Image (tube, rainbow, N blue to C red; front, top):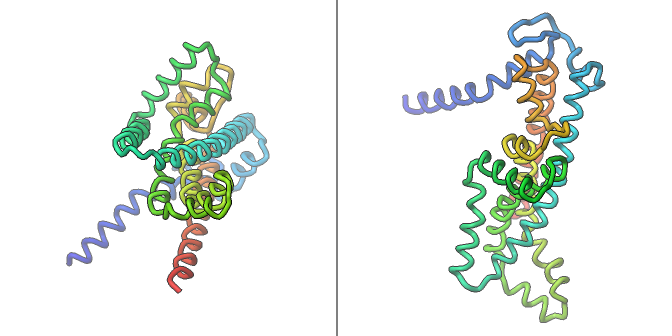
Length: 268
């Protein structure tokens, strides 16, 4: 009975989590303005989204392109800055100072996004920097970098510090030892940090809203917010949500299969 109840609870939880997504996917294949009004199978919404046949479809494509560009730039720079910062924190000899810096690094992750957005907005205003593409990227780098540091630090803690010193003793320069020894050791953490930063940048709304200014820049989250305030969501957004969900699902399957293969190779 306990096993039956446990399985029933698990399946119920999965239904609650994925039923809304399933409904969005189902109604993305019908030419209807509202969910619940099935008008027969149709790919018109997908065609409109991919070809930009309607004005709002073109706006969605522009918002999506802005979101991806900002996420790629912010995630790449955050990965570089976070990895270098993690190495610097790891090499601090004073334990209390290292713990204090790690605690400071964790504050932005605990801090609510709206507080971070308001703080960065006030900072840019005080510096006389008008909101736009650059300020959004800088803001995303600011709140993504701590997550990269958190992803890289465990790899550094598991690394044998004698390997770096051995490379120096064998004639390598500090940069060569860093490139040949440190980076391969922390590479999995860097990849995880990049993926996490990329996801956080795409998902962010509050920070983007406060730092994008009034120049007409729209990301996917701010576009959906503005569209919802008009009294309803654009039907093509159902197709976009379905495509994003399918892409993430495929990436997860590929990553999990690669992880299992690596674990099998390590075991043997």
